[in-house]
Length: 195
Image (cartoon, rainbow, N blue to C red; front, side, top):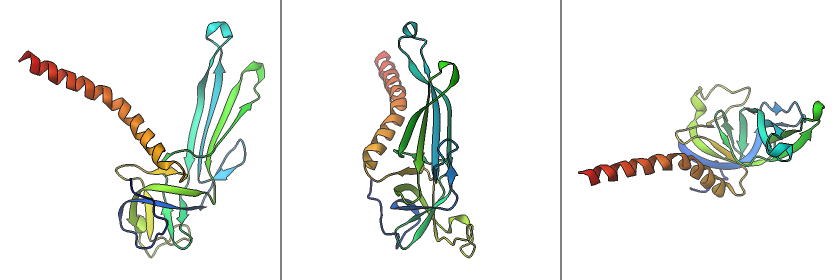
């Protein structure tokens, strides 16, 4: 993994990692807390006491939603438009609290938010003019560069601890593939042994 660029001068199309400050164009607003940001992920979990005669339990996901809006990433001088559709958001700051619910039901509300002014690393695909005529503007803003999801996706995360998070996310994706590879290897060895 290469280092994220802090200076956006001399960018080139293709895969890129950029580090800068978030400047919202449109903001997503939380209906629960009123906080605003360029990314909002929410979930509501219900405590289920069905195990062990009601003495123990576990959280069950009741609802989950994610919302993201295009934003500017700035190095202090230059701007890159980030189109976050389909982005994987790692380690966004988390707010968690219990919600009062009648009839003794315990609910947990969780909210992840990327707020205006936060430092962020965006790893994705960089395109010149973002597919629209460079003379045109996006909502009154002129952009030379746009970052979006590429073949390897788009990842957004605070800069601290990004590499370990990417390694864990990749390992998690591979965990689903490894049993299939092991089965295929076993079948090949069995076939070779039977010959």
